Image (cartoon, rainbow, N blue to C red; front, side):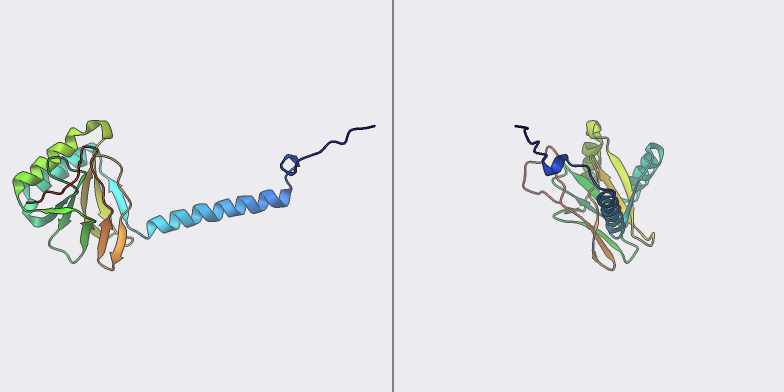
Length: 169
């Protein structure tokens, strides 16, 4: 008696029609992902030279910005510099507002200290290239979310050293 070979459905050859639909579905998903990230704003990492120059300008003219820190200034996760002289807002969820130059400088030093995470300074803009501010962060930048027509918000981001309990000034 001949044994019948039982072919499992997953071992059958894939039809050309199925492949075509799979490729189209993949393209639609990739296109949707790219389109959705553009609608939330744009963020551009600054080069090392630009970063150094802009950070010096931010330290010198810090009064021209609303500065917000994610976590205590002694163990910050990120710093937001939102220009005061415009009608746009760059905010962070659960960020603390800093009102003292000393605290802003301390937070910058601590973020820069986390060299293993390659701290970056980002320029944040919206879809129309309107400037919203800067974000200094020691790790990757979470995607900004549009709150309203004039406000972009960064999600909560905690430093690897952050142990809870915010401290603002």
